[in-house]
Amino acid sequence: MNYSKQRSRESRAAIERLYITMRHLFIRGSYKPMGVSGQSLIEALHILKPEIYGAIDDGERVDMEGLLYVAERLPKGIEECRFIQLVAREGFEEAGHSVIMPMKRRRNCYRIDNDRMYVEMSRGRSDIYDILTHLTYLYIEAEKIRAHAMDLKDRPTDNWMRLSEVVEFQENEQSFDEKRALVYLSNVLGRTVEETRQAVERFERSPGCNSLYHFAYWLGKVAIDEYVNDNRREVMVSAKLKDVVGHHIYGEKWAYAIKDVMAQNDWLERPVHIISANLHSFLNTLYGFQALPDKQFTKLEELAVHTSSREAVDSNRAIREYALENGLTEIRDRSGTNLTVQLIDLEKIDLESSPLGLQNPEGEKPLLLVMDYAFGEQAYECMDELLKPFESENLSQSLNVKSVSVMGKAGILEGNKGDLMIPTAHIFEGTADNYPFENDLSRDDFKDIGLGVYEGPMITVLGTSLQNRDVLHHFQTSTWNAIGLEMEGAHYQKAIQSAARIRKSIAADVKVRYAYYASDNPLVTGSTLSSGSLGAEGVRPTYWISLRILQKILSQ
Image (cartoon, one colour):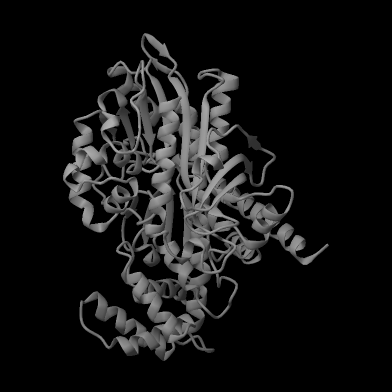
């Protein structure tokens, strides 16, 4: 057996071990990160060595890019807390506690006191696995900081004491010598001064995080407190969360609210096209040209670039206000899924007045149901509930679903950021569940647009933060011939096939369309998710996919 195959098997075994351990700890209800159970997670993560945490296996150097990636997905201030409790929707906001929303994850979080952070988990098991992975990674890096902060006799080093002064100056909004501060911090992190300077700047550009000085200091401080004073950190799970996970509690409420609005507007029998995507590209494509006549855009890319810029706040507001007067109905989520929905009545839009060549369909006009991105297993919960018939006191009505389209961002295994992937099947990692399907989109739909386009099977992974080079290389080079990885495709297709072939709540010939744009290439150093967001490179593929899906819907 060659080394690559051996590493792939070891890595897949580590992923399986992580999920089994996480599920056991979830059912048990609590664990201590530095206890036996926590060490089991840490050891498995060390074996796996995910690409997103580049230097996790380096015992000396703190992983800078991974630290920012995790900080942006966890609530601000979590580094200061000894106790992390995962909860369901249990009335924290109604009781007057302020919501803390992570910058890049839709989670309601609550800082109860100096030591406790409560995090709402309303998006299914994928969300729980995601946060437990991030926390495990933080505890690994915290131990590296602790080791640099203490000498061989367990006394605080001079660098650590100087760093504590810097953090105190920051908290009191006092000036300090940044050149010296960078040296203290770099010694505590085990990185060069230049690497530390760049990381400090990246943290400063991220408004949802504390400064790197603060973040690193408190990670180390809490770890030292446990090591010296035995004040142990603990992760807990509430009884209600254990009770509701996997039972579609939030998805059922979410789907009912949508279908209730449709019933009130007599839309239940209208042909409906469900789209899972962001909430701006379809809105802007349909309404942008009419709502901004003074801009005189002639191409979709001109509109896309303008509305994606920081200076476009007024333009985006104008588009939304125009849309609300011309067929748009917004349904803000109150169920806990954090998925906003747009219902767009094409009967009230003059599509032919835009320069995109879209034609108003003849006969009964379709209704678009655009839902925000789901997260992992949440996709199955929400789509499964949405495709069920609407049930009320005296009514049972199936939706007239004509198509389901999914636009998402994914990791690509061959190609570059911004390229497109058109899946022909979803391979569910870690299970025997594979979902081949006939995609109504193909590579030919995207020729001559100046982007790389790849077609083939895609892997639906259990979590992007657990992927490593060996596992991905196996999926790419073996007979799977996978072109990319994402987190929702198999979950969506499972719900669609169940509704069409088993429940028969939607037509068996419902069209399905999947297209993804590459947010990262986890096989290329410097192109992983932790290297930064896609930025402007994501504008063109997003709008091209949106336009092609709309053209397919209107021609259908």
